[in-house]
Image 1 (cartoon, helix red, strand yellow):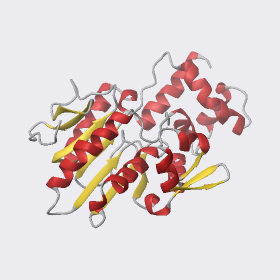
Image 2: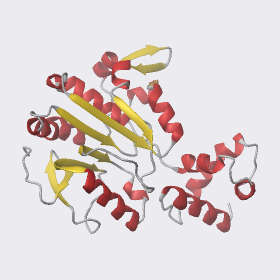
Image 3: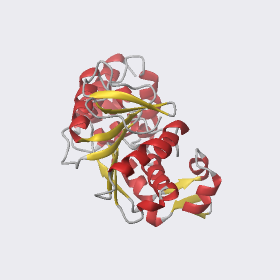
Length: 278
């Protein structure tokens, strides 16, 4: 890949997704785009760029964006956040929502769909008192391919084993050959939609809990500020935002304050009163 070709790909990625690919990530772009070259019987990135320039409406732009966007995840990824969710965050929210008996949760940039399903399993497994509540779990991602896979709820042996305790795998999945299929009731608990965080947002309801994990690191500063400020407008006064371990609101938005639960930093609106146990 030549420098001009890489610059073209970087600009396309930024313009379409808001993700800023660092200048030293050319190797990543080459490896991610290699399968796409084979699919379209092309031999070089230059041919791919040429096809982009001459065939604007062939859907290739979307395929390139989806190939470049990181989609690495697993069930119960990094255990501490889910311990905090189970022992502090959800009990606090449940206590404060007793009168309305409703929880609304958003998994933004859900990647390969394990995160929202992990949330759904956590609610089902540890909070039986929510059986008669209205629980809404929205999961969004920029990739239409990811969304299609997410709705299927099917995982190979490697994916199913990553982070998922054996007893939960047996309880919430059915095996067919080497594929594990998530039970229908858990799949139906999650509403999957395609959405670009860096683009204009559709109407979203007020949120009790928002996950924007391990995606903010790919945006430039201004895009991070915009996303955080949009989330702040959606978050209910005592709701929670969870970012990735390497992500923060510091120097990006004054709307939040950090609260620590079980070695995990969550964020609440700055004028919210702390209430969950530490």
